[in-house]
Amino acid sequence: MTSTQNDHPTPEHLGDNAASWLRETCDRCDLIEEEIRLLPLAAESLDRNEQARQAIDEHGMTYEDRFGNPKTRPEVAIERDSKLAYARIIKQLGDKLKKPKLDPNAVSYLR
Image (cartoon, rainbow, N blue to C red):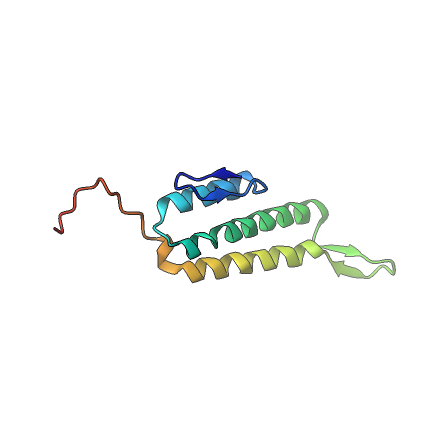
């Protein structure tokens, strides 16, 4: 595992886009430990969605079974499920993803 700037591990199995999103989100947002643990799950969902989309683009959305009947490819369900998982995690985190970390070196005008 590699690490983000704030020492939270980035799983090595993540693709480049998902790993980049995970590092940027951990570094940019002020999250508690339980929320940080959800981010790799969201990143994995992004990866699964991308992998399923690539397979659908390559093979199409359907195939014919042994009787010649059209069937939906499994990647269609994987794409749908990964989008839902990502959306649920992002919804659970809500506004936390919009709040930037406070810079301890910044001058506060509220004192």
